Image 1 (cartoon, rainbow, N blue to C red):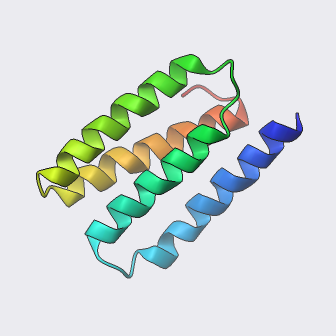
Image 2 (image 1 turned 180 degrees about the horizontal axis):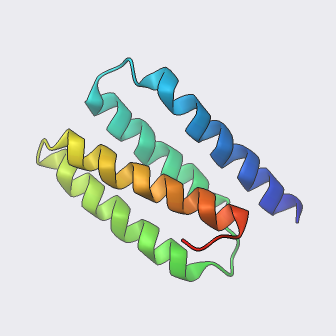
Length: 94
C-alpha cells in the first residue's frame, strides 16, 4: 500500500512538473519524459508486468523517434506512457 502511494505521489509530481520544463526545447522534454518513465517503472508493483511490457515498447519507440530527430513524436509517445503509469497507479485501466 505504501509503495503504491509513493508511486502515485511521484508520478503526480512528475506530471505536474512537466509545464516547468515546457519552456525548454522539445529535445529536453523528450529526454525528461524518458527519465520520468524510467523512474516511474522502478516504482511499479511487481504484479504489473503487462503494463511494464507496454511501457518498455513505448520507450523503445520513443527512443527510435528521438534518434530519428522526431522530437514531437517522442514527446507524444512518452506523454502517453506517463499517463499509463499514472492510470496504473490510480488503479485505472492503462
